[in-house]
Image (tube, rainbow, N blue to C red):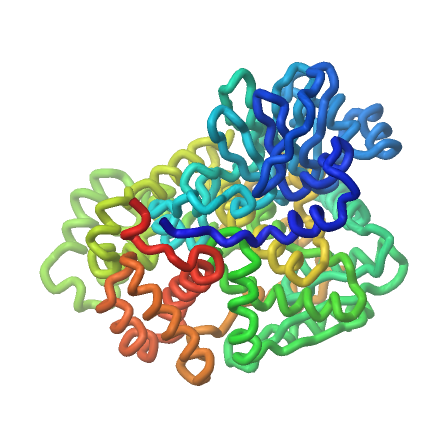
Amino acid sequence: MCRVRATAGTLAQWFTTSPALGRAPASEACRAGAAVADNGCLVCCLRTICVPPMNHSVPDIGLCLGSPRFQDAALQSLSAQQGAAAAWRQALAADPLKALPAVAGDFAVGLRDGRGRTVLAVDRFAMQSLCYRVVGGELRYAERADALADGDTPVDPQAIFDYLYFHVIPSPRTIFRGIHRLPPGHVAVFEAGRLDVRPYWVPQFTEPARADYDSLRASFLQLLQDSVAHQLDGTKAACFLSGGTDSSTVAGMIGRVRGEAADCYSIGFEAEGYDEMAFARIAAKRFGCRHHEYYVTPEDLVQGIPQVARHFDQPFGNSSVLPAYFCAKVAREDGVTRLLAGDGGDELFGGNSRYAKQRVFSWYDGVPGVLRNGLLEPVLGLPGADKIALLRKGNSYVEQARVPMPDRLQMYNLLRRLGHENIFAADFLARVDTEAPLAQQRGVWAEAGTDKLVNRMLAYDWRYTLAEADLPKVRGSTALAGVSVGYPMLDQALLDFSLGLPVAYKLKGLKLRWFFKEALRGFLPDEIIHKKKQGFGLPFGVWATRHAGLRALAADSLHSLSARGIIQPVFIRQLIDELLPAHPGYYGEMVWILMMLEQWLQQHVPGFSMDSAA
C-alpha cells in the first residue's frame, strides 16, 4: 500500500500554537480542516479531536474562509461586528439553498447547525476551496484534499487520466479516491448519515430587449471602480500586471480608488514570442505605477518546480503557475501582503479567441442541408482534395463544424491527437473511463440558462477555465509566496452585469470583448486595447531543449513516471528524444504535465504505482 505524506502546514502550525484542544480553538484550527461525526467528535485534518458531544441547539463553525458579503443588511452588520462566522450561523439556520444565493464574495464555509446538520458551501467561482469525505458515517472536511488523506487512502487512476486530459483535476473528483472537492456554486448537506450535494447557483443569462450604450458604460465604469475598492484591504495597494486589458484596468482603477499609484508586478521571459513586458511598461507609465519587473530564468524553474509540486494538494499542470509564483514572491519580498489579479475579465466579457472561432464554426449550421449534403461535403470528400490547399482548409472546417459543442473544443486535445493507445499502459487504460471527462463537460455545457452560444461558452469557461484552472493557479502560487489575493473582475456586481449584457456587446461580429474595450477606450492605452491576448505563458518547451538542468529535470521525472505503470516507456522515450526537440512549443506542454504529475507523486505519494492502486 502506498503511503501519503502529510503536508498540511496549517495543521502542524495550529497544533504547536493552540493553547488547548478546546472548543474555541477548534473553530480557529479548522481553517485547515474539520469533521463532524454522529458522536459529536470534531475531526481536524489528519487526526481526530474528540470534543464533548455538542448540544444540537448550539451551531458550530468548523471552517470559515474568505470574505463573504451578505446582501441582507442585518447579516452584513453582524459580520462586520462579530465576524463572518456569526453571520453564517444565522444565514444558514433555515434553508441553505435559499440563503447562499444572497451571499457574494469569496468563501468556503463548514457549519454544524442547531439541528445537528452539517452544511458545506463554496462561492460561485470556487475562489476558496473545500474538500470532504465520508468515512464510517462521519463527514470530514478541509480546505485541502491531502489534509483528508491518510496512509490507506488510494490514489484514483481516473483522477490521473482526468489530470492528463484537463491538465488539472476538475471537481468533484480529487487525486484521492473517496475524497471530493465541492464544485463552484455548490452546497453539501450532511444529515442523519446522508450527504446531499447540489448547486445553489447556476448561471442565468438575460438578453435585454434594448441596450443603451452610454448608460451601460457609466454603470460599468463605476462597478469596476467599486469592485477594486472591495478588494483593497488597507495595506500596500499592489497588483499583477501582465500588460493585458484586465490587469492594466485593475492597475489603473487602484489609482482612482486610492488616489495614488499602485505597485505593479510583472514577469518577463528572455524568449521570443513569450515576453509581454513592453505592454506592462506601457500600462505602468500610463497610470504612474511603481513598476517592478522580474525575468524568470530556466534556473528559476529548476528550483521552483519541486516547490510548487510540493505545495499543491494534487497534481496541477497549468504551467503559468510558475511565473505567477515568482511574481508573487517578488511582491512579498517587497513587503506586499495582498495582490489583486485580473482573472475573469475575458470570461465575463467575451475576450477569449475561441469565442470568435466557435462562432465561425456555428455558421455552418445555417447552411441549408441540401447544399451541405448535396454539394459541399461531396466535393470536399473527393479523392485528392486534401492536396489542394483551399479544399483542405474547407474540409478541416467542415470536419470541425459537424462536431457538436462542447465536444468540438476537445478536437485538438493532446491525448486525442496522440492517441490513448500510444500513450498509456494497457492496464491503466483498462481501469479508467476515457469518456468520463467529456461526459462531465457535456453536463456542465447543458446547465447554463441561455440559448446563446457565446453565453454558454462563457458559463462553460467559468467552470473549466476559472474555477478549475486559473483561480487555483493564482490561489496556490500566491499562498506559496505568502501573499493573499483578490479578484476584482469576479465581483458579484460585475458578474450580474455580465449576465445581463447583450451578446453582441461581448462578441460583436468577430470582435472580442467589444463593449469592455470601447467602455475603457481613453482610459486604457490604445496599444493595450488592440494587443492580442497572451498572459504569463511559459517558454518551457523551448528552454527544456536548451538548458541542461531543466532538460535533466524533465527527463528524470518522465523516466521515473514510466516505472509507475501509467505511461508506456516507449512513448516517454519518443517524447523526449524525438517529439520535443522537433516541436518544443507544442510537445513541451505534454512534457510539462507529465513532469508535474511525477513531481507531485514524488513529493506526496512516492510509493505509488498501478500495482499498488488495486
